[in-house]
Image (cartoon, rainbow, N blue to C red; front, side, top):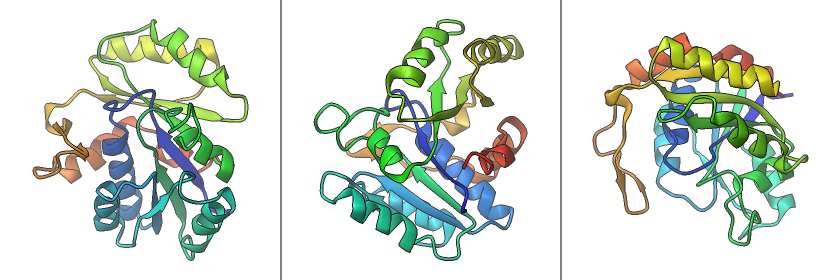
Length: 218
């Protein structure tokens, strides 16, 4: 089975695009053949996926396509891939009608685990009730672990890990807050006219994220 997982977040702006692109670059640099996907009809992020992975990024959208067609696309384009990495859209459960068409629905359709990217810059143990809600809201959506973004200090990191320990969910990493990794927002997506240094992002992910363990999630 090809290791496969979906990167999502509680809300837009948490850093899932940065994390997804960075992991694609990291795995590619490690010699893995990464097949990228994007939830929804997004045509911007897919271009950056393609540039990083060297193979076309495929849209997975249950608004304009049937679940069966989405599954066929997911398998057809994997080909000789070593890893399948899906970037979600908006918040995990945000769809056109409640959670219909959402990243969560894509995860259910494909039967793959979700890695939740959480912006932790303004909270510590208050993350516990937030994460509990996402973990237990839909039993048919498996939250395999959490990556905290914009972590301020070692003390902050320790408090966030305690949250995961108490909730019995895997803490897959704590990415430190770095100004170089911030992206400005613009209409229809993030502004990548000035991309952060990809090598820096890859190095930070190597140091602070359990990227090898991610391959064992499915």
